[in-house]
Structure formats: structure tokens, C-alpha cells
Length: 145
Image (cartoon, rainbow, N blue to C red; front, side):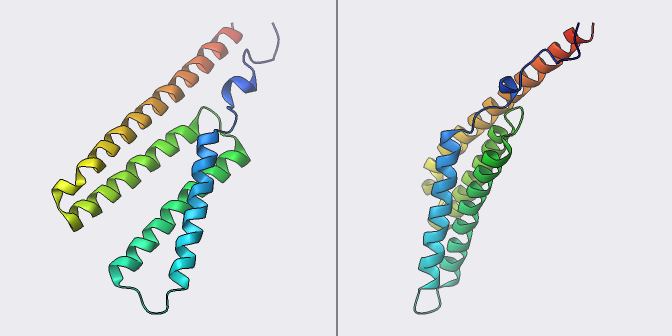
């Protein structure tokens, strides 16, 4: 019997996801480009356009912040997957609602499919995180006996 836990850190700490890093880079790049476009407009933008620009900048910076946090901290128990799933559900729902308000309910059809996909991603991320937690609990239970 040893004082060492029965699991290795690499079993719980995943390498940084390339997809999440790509989303972070794309989010930051998109936010920077939209901010640059907004800053170089010769006149004042209409209120809805300014709101859309601000929303898109916020979405891009949020994905960039998540990717930076994940790269810096390398979260345990796939927390980055759960957070990314939540962001996907929130952002797709918001964009679908805005689309439905502006263009009508029929225009929201593709957005509803995207919401369904994001919800499935979130459910799978939670299941994966829960599986990791139960494995750790089982391993810690074996080590204590």
C-alpha cells in the first residue's frame, strides 16, 4: 500500500484540444476584424448594426478567453468541454432568437438544428466529465482500503 493515488495526472488532464484552440484563434481574429471594421467606419452605424457588431465581438472574445484559459490551466475532468458546450448552446440560442425576431420564424429553422447539435455536444461533454469523476471516485475508493 502506498500513499500515491491510483491514477496518473494524464488520465485526468487532457492535452489542449486543437478544435478549441482553433475556435479561440478564430474568435479572436473575428473579434479583431469586426472591431477594426467598426472603428474605421466613416459615420455612425445604425443601432442594430452596432449591436450586432458588439455581440459578435463579445462572442469571439469569449471563445478566445476559453481557449486561453484551457491552454494556460489545462482543466481537470474535461471542464473545458462542458464550458464550450454551454457557450455553444447559449450563443446558438441567442443568434437563433435574433434571427427569428428579424427575419421571421421560418428563418430560424437552421438555427434550431444548430441548437439541437449544441445540446447534444453539451450532453456528451457532461457524460464524459461524469465518467471521469466516477473513475476517480472508484480509484480513490480502492486506494483507501
